[in-house]
Length: 272
Image (cartoon, rainbow, N blue to C red; front, side, top):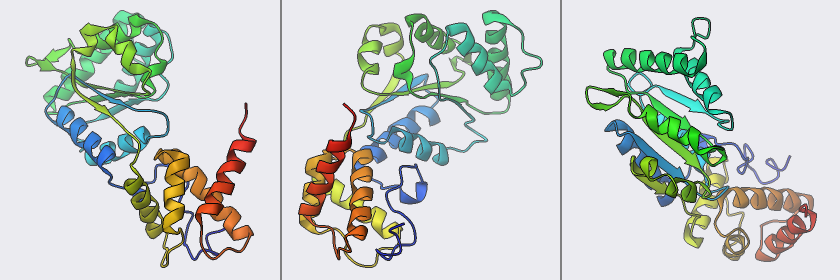
C-alpha cells in the first residue's frame, strides 16, 4: 500500500523469512557458522536457542540454503508437540517418504529410521533432523527417544545430526537431561541486535526494497532501538506501521517523534 509513496518496489518489513532481505549481522552469521560446523563435521547434535522474534527461523532458512541437499538431506519437524511414538512414526514417514510400507509401532518406526540412515550412509549422505519449536516437546521420554536416535551410528559416528531449535525455555529443560545436553556439539544462543546493528538492519532492508533516499532519520533509528530492544520481529512490525502511517500523513521522512507515537499506538491496541 505504501511502497509507491516511499519509492520502494516492495514492502521492506514483511514478516516472512525472505532470503533476499537477510541481514548478515553477527548474531545470525555466528549461529550459521556454528551449526554448519556441527553438521558438516557430522556431530551428533546441536542447539539453536533464542527469545521469540530474534530470527531463529531466518537462521534455519539460511542454513538450509547453505547446505548441499544431496550431501545433507534435511528432515524438518515444525510441530513436535506429539506423543513419543507418534513423533517417531512421523520422523520415519518423513525420512522414507513412503508410508505405505511403514511397519506399525515404535519398533517399526525405529527400524525404518535405521534403514534410512543405512541407505544414506551408503550414498555418502549425512541426514539432518531439525526439530523446530523444540521447547514445546512435552514429556522427557520424547527427548530421551531423540537422544537414543544418536546411538544409531554408522562407521562409529552418529548416523544423523539432531538440531534442536527453540526459545530460551528449552535451556532449563536440557539442563535437567544431562545425557542429551552433553551430546550437543555446539550451542548457539541468538541475541537481539545492538543499536548500531538495528540501524544497519533497517537500512539494509530499505535498500533491498529499492530505497534511493534516506527515509528514517538517525534519531528515529535510536528511538526504534529503544522501543524494540533490537528484536528483529519487533523492528519489522514497528517500521512497517511507521511507514504506513507516515504515508497516510504524507510525511517526508520518519522522525523519532513519529516512531514514538506509532509505538504508543501499538501498545494501546495490544491485547491484555
